[in-house]
Length: 259
Figure 1 (cartoon, one colour):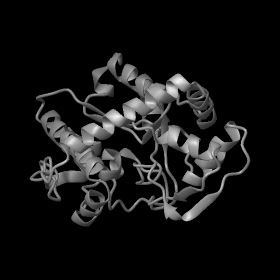
Figure 2 (spheres, helix red, strand yellow):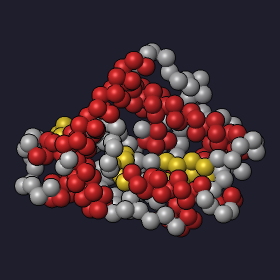
Figure 3 (cartoon, helix red, strand yellow):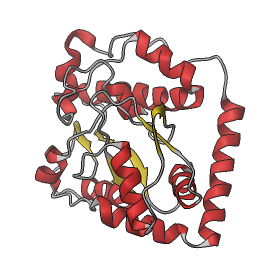
């Protein structure tokens, strides 16, 4: 959700979004998200404000910073349970809501092991100048629609074509700003993403275990409980999230060139 918030109002919806396409979310988009899902809004807004503050400190040479922006993550040990819900719906032949709010209908995903790969690459980079003050998109190569994800998952599970409801929005995709581009981290840090097919095969195989399904359900319930108990009318970082970045005289440049 924090990644989505960075691209609300971007004018680059016809292709995968680059790191420098990020902009400040407008009030209308922010209020729409808050109304739709207060927990996701607060969660994403907190990360959004952290990114602003960290970049500001980095520009002042107070702190070495590298920011990794992620789309929705799939793989074992999911603490939300979204993919497990999708897999269960497919197996039980339920209709799948397949409409997304992505501006061009495409989304990006990342496999959980690739997130770890990106963290290791940044942490072990021999030249600090390669990563300090930089922002990287961590994602698969594939740019797909949610419908494509459903069909590919169904094929991995060996199921018949699912029933799709293209008129109702799904709630499984939280990063719905459109596909994001991973060329920067691939060229600079030699990041090698897992393919969508391989990621789905590993994830579906992991969920085949009753123990793993129960593990995910328990994590998801814990997350739900935490979100309910922390839900309030307060808006984290509302003062700094008023439509301008810290050091707002050069918002877009500061995102791609913090120096």
